[in-house]
Image (tube, rainbow, N blue to C red; front, side, top):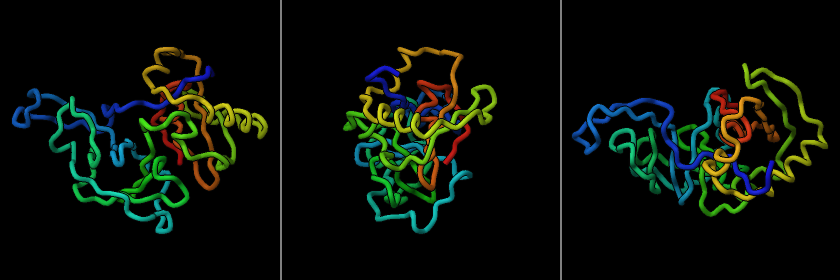
Length: 217
């Protein structure tokens, strides 16, 4: 990987559930919007992790850091720019909590779901973006063809990768994708956090690796 490349989509909320938007909301008639389950708080945008692969426990939920003030699926048009308090599907007044063990600029919890950072304008490096330093138990590769397990990375290789990975500059998904294009020869890379998995279908899947819809927590 080249220094200065990031791998995270930037403010793209156009895949997920499709909802029609009518002209009575000021949107073009017969428009379908595919919303990703996302939320923005304290100038950071997050996307949801798959609930089937991680069930939030009582001990995970920390103090309240904010709440939802606007539900986009009900009102927003496709050109809507997310603001603090906006959420795709969470109801207004839904509380947003700390996720115990993580910094809130990496992960939060709302309505029993873990939300992970998608874009943070204040982040300068990957280490600023992802609170995973000294929390990695290992790494593994999966097939880009069917998502099947390929191999585990050796401990020394994982450590070397993480050191270089966290030192990368955060530049945004668009710049990364413009450099790598749509290369077919890719694999999925999973980073296994201590006690949990990290979602690399967003972290790496849409840049150095092919995007996947199979989330691991």
